[in-house]
Every structure is written in structure tokens, then in C-alpha cells.
Length: 137
Length: 349
Image (cartoon, rainbow over all chains, first blue to last red; front, side, top):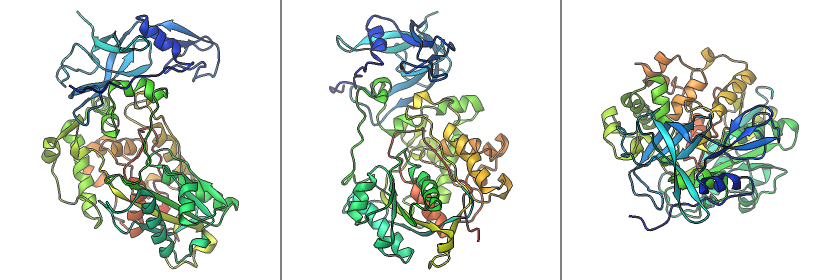
């Protein structure tokens, strides 16, 4: 097992609400008040219509497995290969990179479009990562 | 930009290519530059415009002893140098400079004097991709591939064919690192790197570089080499975050740049008998072909794949060189930033 820690995000003023959310057990997205566009990653304006009137909301945390690789080598610090690097398409529309937990890291188990739900992994007192696991049932 | 107003009048690679442990990255730039300047029959002092990427243009210009009146440091990944051609042509047409040198180099294999790639933990990539275990291009570039395969019904055997064809074309290049023929079976049995891609589907890392010299068409005929006139160009970018690509079977940069190049050149697909598409990782030529609308699907994935991948046989010397200029390992991250200059460089006169 690699001793080096995985890369840890450092929030900026524009992304702090997202990381506050994961720490509180919420996946937070932003929606444009003007055109209703839901977008990610965070920024204080709508990348579709440029309105600065945007709201943060709690997302459902549900999505599906959109694409992935199973990385064998070289492994990132803090990861034991083989491990999947996934892109999840959230029910609200945006896609985000994540990892799939509670699931064998194999092509057979990682079926595209399988339903996923968010799970939170605490790295330290400031940072909790949003990971995903197969939806039960 | 009007067609045929600017031409490539010098082109060269580094003296050595492949594994060059005794030369630093900036010297690879200089080596390619000096070879290109000699190819064009020029002196260093004739160069008044300079463009490069990864290294800063001021760094390389100073190292070379050039004081340019126009510089471009557009650095958007492995296609940067093709964008430089477009920008240089515009600058020459606008009268900002007369003779432009473009250099590319990378000590990709030996890692001598290479600029470190830094992704800060507070950058968007550092916050929303790096923590999930991406670690260099092989773990990032292939992320869209499974979705692409599902969307278009492509098998592992079919996508492996790209690497087989890449190798066939490489074998025609005397300076290529890998020339031995490979089969689909070889590809599918090679070492797994990031499923679904194996080592034969990943970008080679290479020490080397290339350089081009451009000038206006009215001066070009006085040069020792036959000029390569620029018919048309296009450019765009997508995103440096692979997870945020608009679609996983296409690049917006390809889609925007292609029609621009065709439009400027005033030609149609049927006029193109040679095509080169950025092919660092083995799915990219398929994205490029699809986005250029060079083929219908059956044509693309069927028995003709072998011929389609690099259509035609016009492997003129300059084509080789231009290919190298943008085909050496994409330094960045970025599935984002393919541009292309298809059909743009012709022996038009």
C-alpha cells in the first residue's frame, strides 16, 4: 500500500461552498436563476448565459457511470492499482470525475450506465471527497 | 486569412530523434531551429518572428540569440505548433514580421532540462480531477474511450486496429522509433496501462523536436526549397479537464477547426488525398476523422480502416516534418485542445 497520500484539493473562494457541502454530507451544485442551467465545476456565474445570479443547491447525489478507465500503471500517490477513475453523470446533468467504491474494479463489475449514489470520504477536517457506489436494490 | 499568401520555406527535425540523453530540452529546440534555418538557406539574423510552446518564447529566443519583433507563446497542448503556423501566417500577412521560426522540442524520454508540469491543488484540475487518481496522460486521455465504444458499437478489436495502422505508417518513416509490424492480437495482448488501453495504444514518449520557417508567398519563391503554401487553417480549444468534455466521442476543437480550414482553403473533402490527425492516443484519429466528417461510419470502422486512417500516399518530406512538429508527445494534460490543419498545407504552386 502506498504511503503517500492522495492529492488533496485546496478550495478557492469560488469553490468553498462545494467543499463545505461534502464535509456536511451534501453534494452541492449550482443552478442559474436566469436560465435554469445546472453546471459544474463551481463558479459564480452561469457558463451558459453569463448571468451572475446563480444559486447553490443540494443535488440528489444520484447518477450513472458515464465512462472510466481502470488504471494499472503508473499509480497515483495514495492509490493501489488497479483502480477505476470514473466520470459520473449526475441526474441533474453535469458530469464529474470520481472513484467507484464498494465495487470490484473490473470491466465486468463496472458496467456503463449503472446507477450510482454519492458516498463521502473524509480526508481530514477540511476536505471530504465525493465518491460513488452502486445504488443498492 | 487568404489562401496561398504565406509558405513554409524551411523545415527540419533535431539531428537525433528517439533517445537523446546528452541533449537538454532547450538545446533540442535550438538544434531543430538551426537545422530549419539551414534548410531555408537563412541566417539567424533573418528571423524576426518566433513562436514556441511549453518553453516560453522569450526563453528560447534568447537562447538562440534572436530578437524578434513578433512572438507567440500559445501553449494549448500538442497542437500548439499548428496554431503557431496559423498565427504566424496572420502576422506575416499583417506585416508584423517577415520570417517566422516555430520550434517544438521535448526531452520526453530522457527528461533533461524539462520544464516541470505543475497542477496546483487549488486549480480546477487539482480540485476536481487529481484527487481521483489521474496520474499523467495515459490515465486521462482514454477516459472517454469506453463511452465512445458503447455509443458507436465499437469492439476492442476494432479500436486496436488504429494502433496497427499507426505502426504501418510509422514503418514508412525512416526516423520512426517503432517500425516492426504489429497485429490486432499483439495490441490486445500488450501490457495493460489504463483499461481499455494497453501500452501499444498509448502515446510514445520521445526525445526530439522540429522547426519550421514561414515567410510571405512573394518571397518564398526565392528560397532553395520548394515552398509549401498554406491554403487554409482553423483552430479552437475544448477543455483541459477530460471529465468536462462536452461529448465523449468528439472534440469541439476538431469540430470548429475543421470547417474553418476547409472554408479558408475553399476545397471540399473529395479534394483531400492526404490527411494527418493528432494521434497521441489510439482513439484520437477516430475522433478527428469523425469530427472532420471524412467518413461515414461503415467506411471508418469497416474493412477500409487501413486505408482511411491516413488517406492517400503523398508522404512528401515536408509532410513528415510537419507531422513530427505536432505529433511528438502532447505535454499537457489535455484532451482538450486538438486543432487541426487538415488539408491546409499543399504544394499548391
